[in-house]
Length: 347
Image 1 (tube, rainbow, N blue to C red):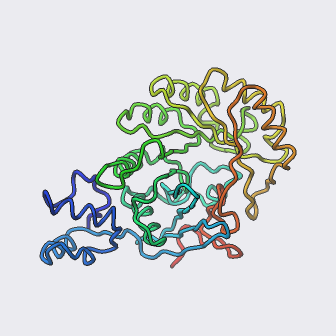
Image 2 (image 1 turned 60 degrees about the horizontal axis):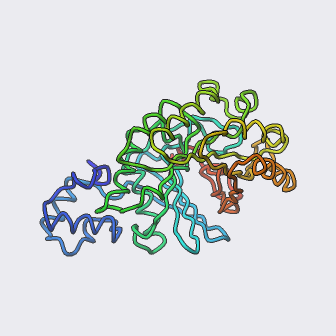
Image 3 (image 1 turned 90 degrees about the horizontal axis):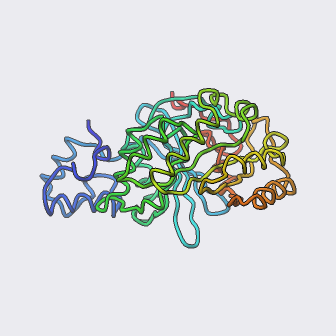
């Protein structure tokens, strides 16, 4: 049966006033079933139920963090699982959504990469994360104003489904998000970056997970990095900026003794010369068996200071939800103190 959430809002069934009511129930009220849509005629609700599904998840579990963040663990009808993270701030509500079950990028410092790749998520399974998290938090889906494609998976390897989900989220009669508040994070796939630049009706923000400025280190921590050189990634970033006029963010996980040397800060500054960019230094979030350690605070500060002295716009991004296993690099289908659930957990 077709998932209603897979459809672009313009393709929703019903016409005129009834269509607007349906969209309001889905995206403003976050209805979990057609039966909840009480101002639609019973016959219409029955026809919708016979033709479409609305909730793409078999079950949902939550793991709260002491900082207010909440990790959501979704089980899909095929028993595969993935996660999303809700992060409340004083001035905004943010959600980090997954685009895949697992991830094929295999970044060595990321627990998701250790799971391997399960499958791509559908547009409805991506959008559904936002709706389900909003229901879990007791808020309207339209109150979640910031979104990052930065959970499980490489968004540019599930390109069409991610673009469809982004268009649904931005649509004025769906979630109505601002394109300036939606970010896509990629490990650095030049072909996908160029395709994204050409999506001129989207205008969402681009973040590139570079993590090292030299090939030897990058290929050590990102085993799949040999497919695209740093030079190719940087060339695509410059083309993206030339085409869109948008700033490019670079994510840099700080790994003790691996990519936190000052000569690497200098090399990173050289790579970014002439590019309007921002660097997010991310303290490595620990997980069992990673084989990596956090960069000490003094060394992180020295790396930051060197970049700043070289004219690089830089900040330190302190991850939320570490105690819930919800921080960057920690999404591994597990609860704190428990073994990983695995890609298929209910058999």
